[in-house]
Image 1 (cartoon, helix red, strand yellow):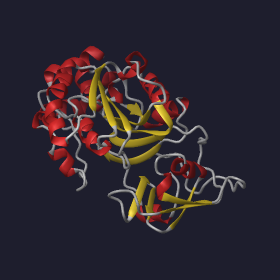
Image 2 (spheres, helix red, strand yellow; image 1 turned 45 degrees about the horizontal axis):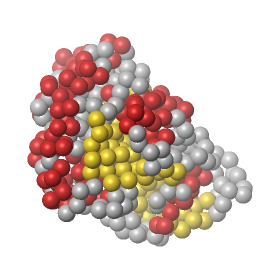
Image 3 (cartoon, rainbow, N blue to C red; image 1 turned 60 degrees about the vertical axis):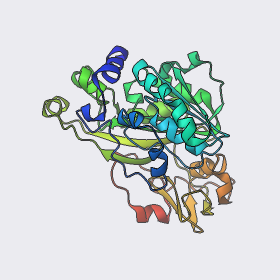
Image 4 (cartoon, rainbow, N blue to C red; image 1 turned 60 degrees about the horizontal axis):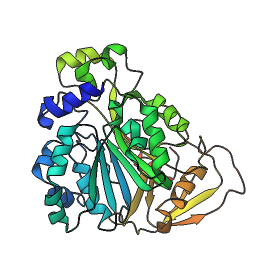
Length: 347
């Protein structure tokens, strides 16, 4: 499968226009604050972009960031502007043709930004140990529509866990299925290259995450994918695919369910570009100045991460009230109820 992926992204695709599905195309609405950053990126880097979501979480200034499967470096160069001159962004990819484009334009971007805080490594995302990266040395790790292409997804998650600092997070977009993908889809070279053949059943992804030590994966957003090629649509049959962005926090005390300790948080409105509301995930949309009830896991995600300064915390862990209302296990993808999320709720 590695050979298939390297051939598909290194030789078969010349630009995003060659794709046969919407899986590897980011149709998300780009926020206004991010548009100027993308306009600073070289056109060739943008032309050969094959991501399925936005992987630019808040508060990256001064952070050390790792991008898994960075391709030509679009996300690396966007994140480099958010990390600033005191931060660093490292991109990892296994496709030589993609890395050649990324490296070719490093000087261009250094001139655009006024500093050079980027480097690229050739390697496999399921073999991060081979790259001699320091354990517990990254604040944030990102990935954009790449984990589905890996033949060893548990190894990817294990490597991420090893490299994240305590309180750090894995913030990434990928493709998931509403059921386990049949072998006829998984073994099709084009469907695999289009990020569908290797897609995980969403519940298997949650299981793998928890096994790797990420007890409470949080869904940020999602969208259904369309297989626009009729021949490929016939092959995929009734399987439904989704692009979804998750965040996994490296916090040892997180539990595998959302427990109620009578806690709440108040967002101060101080995160850049979010003066009125902070969105932790699709169900935690926190209005500035409003007391927002949270489960113990959400409390810890905010208190033990880079977001702590921007919140006031109410309560502790001295008394347990049972499961947090709304902690369910049904298919997570789809439109959320913003009004319910703003009122306080669980994932």
